Image 1 (tube, rainbow, N blue to C red):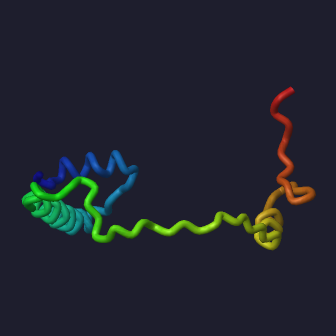
Image 2: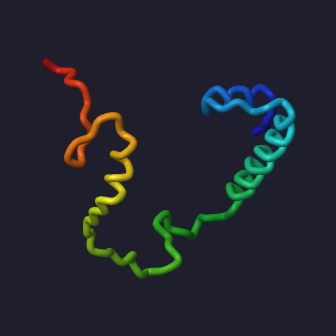
Amino acid sequence: MQIDETLLQRLEKLSYLQIPEEQREDMISQLSEIVSFVDNLSELNTDGISATFAMSDVSTSLREDIGVVDRTINDDILAHAPHAQEHFFIVPKIIE
């Protein structure tokens, strides 16, 4: 895949980013290097490797899911709210 100005403009539009004019050539060069690297990966022979191949047969250990409540974080956030009461945001009623 060739990275050119047209493709860069399309990527800008899709990502809602704006690349400054002085950085455009560098960006095209960097994106071309990335695409070239990925193309090299597609040349690897993976015929004898299972799609579920992993480096280790050991499964990921799970931890107990324990909820933690830190009221200081809540208080810090609510301190910036226009209206708050009893650890909740107060908002205008929108449904009658």
